[in-house]
Length: 290
Image (cartoon, rainbow, N blue to C red):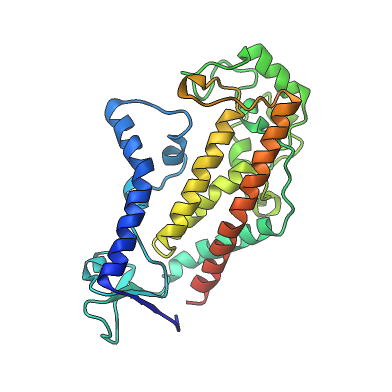
């Protein structure tokens, strides 16, 4: 890294504390729910499906090209090294990317670059969640009723074409729902199929950010997490579940107005995701050249 930014002790600690304060609005409620054994059908997904532990989300990292003055405590993490020229007292910075992590960086860059080059497709209406409960008594969120009941839910699935291109959504479809999907996504064609209008592709920016931890700036990780949080709300409001007791108003995709609202929000999320995707691609290019 030819150009480095030096942060004074007071500066980086202020940034660290601001990050922790920001993230605790999500991790503190999770900790409270876990202490009481309470499950949340919307928000727990961000900490169960996504494997990044809350303690790791709370941890602040500056990203590459930044020297932290007076931060020798960071040397307890293997990714960090002391500043070699001794320009700062107890200064530390991220070392070079370990070669073993380079394949992950290359995959993330190729996947995100491919998605960034495609026009968002906004016509799925969130039917993936409906396909996950189609013609089955074993629903994923068993403690929450279906708004339209089982028969009504099945009729919605059968009334519209399903075009889910995201493998990690498609793999949870019930067996009767799988043949209804006009696409057959697989893990091997992930790069070829993912497109930026997909809600799960937007949420997954968080996954690709933490896969690069600690070499990704924590503000970018938090930005991606916040986007994933907001998308998840739409994902479940447009689902077949009745979440009104949690104050989530349904987006009724079985109606024309509900589908229009879904598309409106979907387009907004695609627009929010684009600059975050670009930042992750740029970071991958930096890491590949480090």
